[in-house]
Length: 373
Image (cartoon, rainbow, N blue to C red; front, side, top):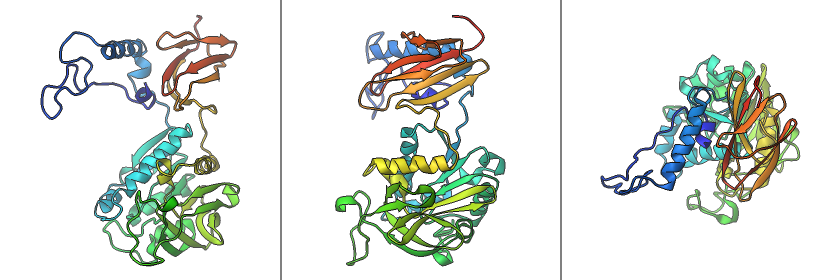
């Protein structure tokens, strides 16, 4: 059901009967190696039957397009595979951003940036660029055009420190990205993990090579917020941009308005915090940053909401990511009929439906206009 909330139009199980070939002998399956049914087989059948009742909602491309995308770049990925210390950083940051947005209740896409044109990018209010260490000027110019046409680019540290051919850029940043963000680099330094952890930090070679772990304080549009610095700390001289993150009097994050959009440069790898050294402050800063980009959260409660929609009918997929049961009241104004996909009881009073979901469970509401109960 979570997968259906992310837009899939079909679900296929690898095997129905337990696998008979090594190295997957007797691995997970709907049926055991003998017997004609199991509780999981019956549950899969129950869910499949329910989804098929609304095949126009779940079997077609009806996922509502998100306002945010995380950009991936094959050239950058290949570069990181060559690093003896840090080959996993890009994936670390990317999956962290995914979790940060998931927990904020913000739907997202993944897009391969090198294959997209101006029209493709313009569909998103915000585009997140995790640790873009290797970056071509062609892609940098495409991102610049995206911002000038009204987009919001959120970029982690070191944009184009090397070209897509792994040659160092003079000034230690992509020329096009320096101009877009309105900065010159002042410093680029590895920063320690909290408590001298070693989840991604290599051994220090000389005394004073690494900075101590630090919190970055928000300024201007992010005033009152703060975030933990991860992996590196890149500091900047503002040319025609405004500071948004600072380490003392050092600027380590900026925002610059360009054309009809905004370019946000973070001088660290914020995404790492999605899965390591997690804290509430960084999550609040991410939500504030996206709000500054005009991104809306579909549901303000603790439950996570995804939608599938056709004319006069929608499916609302509600997930409880918490460790405890959650009860919330959902506004269903304008919908004639509201029912639970799997037939569970709903308590409706006028334009409100009270819903209860166990920890790590999912419920799906089917909302219909223009017919009676």
